[in-house]
Image 1: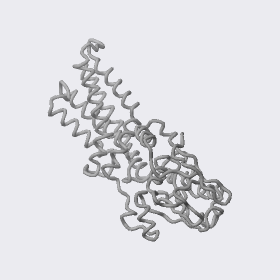
Image 2 (image 1 turned 30 degrees about the vertical axis):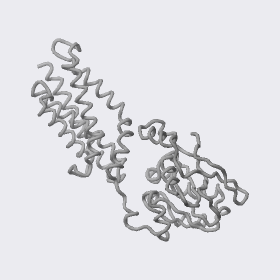
Image 3 (image 1 turned 135 degrees about the vertical axis):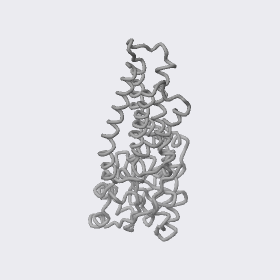
Image 4 (image 1 turned 120 degrees about the horizontal axis):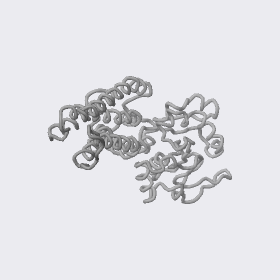
Length: 343
């Protein structure tokens, strides 16, 4: 990708270190918008290595981050007025938290990167400031043993980095607290919406085909009376799992995302019943209960990997229980709907 954030070089110990701006541009903004919608997400990265901000010297702090550009931008824009170094690890374009879980933001990569940039020749201290969310992937004592550098974990959010420094490199409870607020959830919705687009298209096509079935054969003449409503119900079920569930996440009972998605799907189904739009007979209405709640539940489970609410073991446990139930509900719904068309 084009590195529009370069503004020059800093020469220290005969090494020319790229100097970067702490101001984000319109290009950066549009890149962030595109990646939020899943466009070229796997390519939204910067080159690993050492960068400079402000007017750093041998005594300046070293901040470590991932080469996912959103993570990189979040750090640099919060270093305005700070003289420091940014050590970017090769996380294959994955953010700090996820990369730490996968091991790419880890001890081996950190040690290798320190050696590759000859960091001991750039700075005259042994202090590295890492994001707290990278702690699961880094063994501080091994980094110390192999490089001599000490790992200090900064705040959860880059917005608190200056306050962390001014507090004598100490993080208070608020800096250590991991939150998943309304704004955080909204930011993740577009990418998750696009992530499941093929599921949505497949489900809409499948139920459009079913909508034309009857004892007289296949007919799609009455789109607004048959195919249209079927597609709309699938779309509403998808919205329920991908949009409604995360928006209402803290207020929906239960811990499992699949159950939360089931509940929001039931609310959508109940709304259709009250609007007399759930079907033309009891069998069709019952079938849509199973189908809508299943689609919503399945799509809501995608948030198990996007939130702070679950762990890897928790995700595996939930999938082991929920997916068989979802398959069963989906089959029941489809069978009831198909059978109802031939009675």
